[in-house]
Structures are given as structure tokens and as C-alpha cells.
Length: 327
Image (cartoon, rainbow, N blue to C red):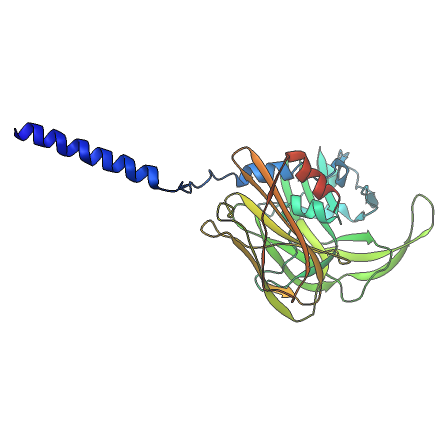
């Protein structure tokens, strides 16, 4: 008798549960997406054109290397002067270029916003977080027979960056990086970028631009701080888009500036604390969830809103690459 009662009880309980589930509205449980930030970064690496890079090689013959000017594809000129006194290895031992069997000077330069996004070169000072206007981003590295070199104390490399209309108050900012090599921001700005004229080695015509002196190897930025008053600006995405799988950028219009907003793995909000008021910007969010890629876009003027909400639309990988190549 007790067995029959227990069986009846469980049948009724099961029936009640089935009825309850049948009456419920559909509930979609949020399942966090697998972090794909590195995959997204790899996709963005397709954006920079191959011709932003140039490598120059010299074979030491024992004779001092003559002063020379290395011209990058973008017209940037790197002056290699007194080369035997320029470099040392990472232990501080001088490395004369005349005795180096395989000296390589590796360079990259871009003044395009889409390439700055792809190379993760956001235009913010470190640690203050002020927004920069850039005339160009330059990387210079040197090696001897595969051994990394650095500039000797007191040495510098003169660089000329062509621009149509040089501006005042431009300066040299050097990259500050974390232990993993990720850019934290740009530091200093005490070394001036001087407006200069020089004669083109090809046509002989006068070229205007900036002249800077590099005190170290790596990435540098010819830039100036945007002086306007600032305001916080945040972009809110749907809950499944966080710093694990999304990146959000402010692309300034009429100013050569691009800034990546800061996000976290626990939030779908991406923010810039010191956005200069009055500048028109194009807001771009790119993301990946699983195998699906996403883009969200809008335009605004900084200071109009302190928070914007965006809803990404599904796109292909090529859509993202094509969008950034146009910037």
C-alpha cells in the first residue's frame, strides 16, 4: 500500500513539473562566450599594408660606414650618421657598424587611423590618459647578426617626417609598454618636433615636415596633446560583448587621432575618461563571438552624451578588414 502511495506521489509531482514547464515562457540562459580577443587581434593584423615596413641591410667591411639617409616608402627619412658610434648590445658593449657582418635596420611608419587600430597604437598619454593628435607613428629597430641593438647613451637618430602643413607644439612621444609588450600609452613629449624643409632626393622639390631626434629604439609618436576641456565618454554594448571578445574605438574626424576605449571582462561598457569636448568622432565597435563577427557604428560629437548604446550587427571578417582599411 505504501509503495502504491509513493508511486502515485511521484507521478503527480512529475506531472506538476511538466505542467509548470509548459506554462513557462522561454528562458535563455546567458552563457559567456569563449574569450576570442587574440583571434580578433589576429584578424586586425590583416589591415596594415605591407609597404609600411622597410628593412635596410649592411655588411661590415671594416671601413667606417658612410653617412647615409634611409628613405621609407612613406617618404620618411632616417639619417644614419656616425654609425660606428651609434649602437651597443643589450649588455652595453659598443657594436661598430663597420665590423658588424649583418646589420639590419627594421622600420615601420603609418599615419593612417585604420593601421593604428590594427597595430594597437591608441593615441593616449601614459599615465595621464590625455588624447593625442598624431602626425605619424614610427618604429625603428636594429640588430647585428640577429643580436638586438640599442642606441648608445648620448646618441640619437635624426628623422624627418613629411607633412603638407606642419603644426606648432608637436613633440616626440615614446611608447611605454607592459611586460608582455602591449602599449600602455605615450610618454614625455619634452623633445620638440621641429617644422623643417628639405629637398627631395628624387625630384629636388622642397618638402615640408617635422624633424625629430630619436633617443631610443622602438615605437615613437610625433604628436601633441589636444588641449580642450574633457568629459568622460562610455559606449555600452549588449551583455555578451565584453573586453574578452570586443574592442571599441573613437576615430576622430578632421584630426589624425584614434583612441581605444577601456573595457573589462566583467562589463559591456567601454570608456574614455578624458575625451576632448567638441570633437566630432566616429565610434566603431568590432567583436567576435564563436565564429561570428560583429560591427557597430555611430557618429557623435564629444560632450553631447556621456554614454552611447550600440547594437552590433553580424558581418564577415572581410567586412571588418575593409572598414578599417578605409580609415
